[in-house]
Amino acid sequence: MDIEEDIYFNMDAAIPLGIITNELVSNSLKHAFSGRDKGEIRIKLHREKNGEREIEDCKSTTFTLSVADNGVGIPEDLDIEDIDSLGLQLVVALVDQLDGELELKRHNGTEFIIRFVVTDRDNQLSEPASQLIK
Image (cartoon, rainbow, N blue to C red; front, top):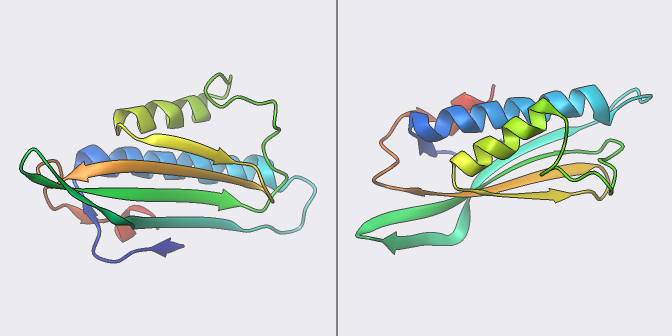
């Protein structure tokens, strides 16, 4: 786990991020390592370099959450925007709720990358991000 220190989110961001992370880790544990003795799941959360800008007199920051594994990978023909998996449907809906972008990489396993913007106005100090994922 690689969580940048001093990142705080209000509940409107913290709860969806916690659920997204839980769903993606659960999917990796269920599907990525079938027939394998071991595997690796990596979670990263950080601010984007040069991701701060002024929007309507408020400072905003772009964040990236990445959940990756070195498992068997999601098949190329599977469209995560149109899938029967309730967990992945929930992930897509929560990323939309954050007004974020979801990217899926299928090289040497699976990596979900979520980018989202938080403004100071939205981000009243709450729990540190490192406490969301334990």
